[in-house]
Amino acid sequence: MTNKLINSLEDSLDFFIYAPYSVLKHIWIQLLIIGLMFGLGTLIFMHYQGLDFLTALLGSVSTITTIGIYAPNLVTMPASEKVWLIIIFIVSVGSAASVVQGTVSAAVKKEFLIEELTLKKAKRMKNHVIVMGYKFLGKYIVENLKALELEYIVIVRDSSQIDALRAQGIPAIHAPIIHAFEALRQAGAERACALISTFDEDCDNMLAVLSAKKLNKEIRTITIINKRELAKGARESGADIAVSVHDVLGEMLAISTISKEITGVFLTDRLKSRHIAEFEITTSGIKYGDLKGICPILMVSRKEEVIYDMSNDFQLLIGDFVYALIDNESLKAFREKLKSLSVAR
Image (spheres, rainbow, N blue to C red):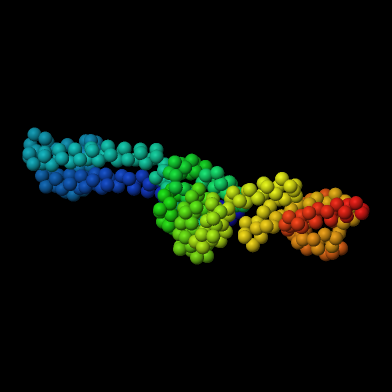
């Protein structure tokens, strides 16, 4: 809660500092020109009218701004002074009009300010997650990161997505994939804990992983793979986890047609043929020891409780759910064992 409050205060402080800055950033040249015109007018009045500096400055400001506190005699004014004042008036009016236009433009178009605030926020982030790509998969990744209360920032290569993301309060940076290294640096990859790359092109994902590892060797990199034959290349590029989305979904859907117990699949090659299965206990009198030899049992879910450490005599109750690590063979064996125990009871 304290971190959230601190982050909120920092965001508010950034706004009050960078809101004026984002406007001044686009009109400072015009303001400088107007200031120079005030100074030039002051010198002219000092030279031609014989005024002291402060009086000449007041006269210059009042004349250029048309307030009219000081009005020298135009009839007796030397021709060279008139020429100088005409030039000053023209330049000042043009610059003032440009200042108004630039101010209104910067105020109406909030992207200048929001971009500054996003980059400032990214500089403060630590142990955050960088999500590259925000299409179908990226959208759901961000939703889950929010649910886990993890800090994150999104990098997109489609500029049309930026306004929509920022309107939702999602910190986002736009960058073409060829500028991935610079975008990751701006997103604080050196301080991030993880990168998730979800682009449609595998080469883009590998470039993102390579760039992230270049900036931070310790960052955990996860990428999707659209073509299974590139999975090895993705891992060699530095990806800690390379997920072949279509293979995972295909396997999950296919095995679900023959078993209602399957609840999850593994992403690593080492456990590729294993699955997590959920079995409901519908008969009393079954003990943990009756089942444990068939396949590894991960845990037992009992109402609101999750139980990990069970002895052989641990009694399973009706309504318990047992989660086991199975393959095709042990799935059949576990199912048959439960059936035989139910009949025996």
